Length: 193
Image (tube, rainbow, N blue to C red):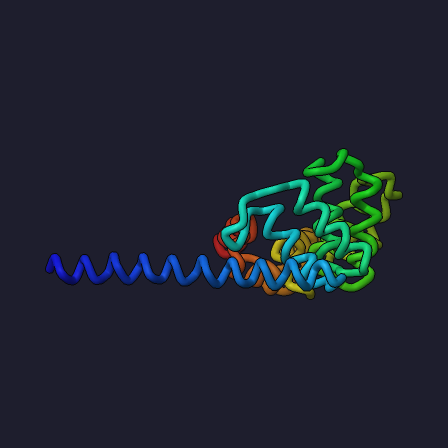
């Protein structure tokens, strides 16, 4: 029994060393490609620094730098992430209007997360956006169709409130499958009616 445990520990150690090497190689390749204006590599590198992913130590400034470069090259994910940075004040001054600007660019490329954030902006007038419920609903539907679980929940909730229960359940189930707790709760409430 002890030998089996030793083998497992040694195996885990070897896997950890191997994965660190793989991450280091990936980061090195991304950095090389990022320095050659590859927007996908810039975005991956930026996200790694921004969120401490892929065995990279979190460095907000470095993350925002690479995200901004990719966003300026038109990368939809980077534009969405830069909008999130401006919305929260992560590595930049908190500037809601700048957040909306970047989400708009990303949403124009059908990025589901950006579509959702633009829907929220139109719902409440965030970042100087003019409140427009119809535009918000259309963006929300696009985000839901794009797979954003928050949008699926919110779209399902709107359909539920509009007495379109079958349609609401469809979207709520999709959201719940992705782990959205509010969708699970509403589905439970609907099933108890």
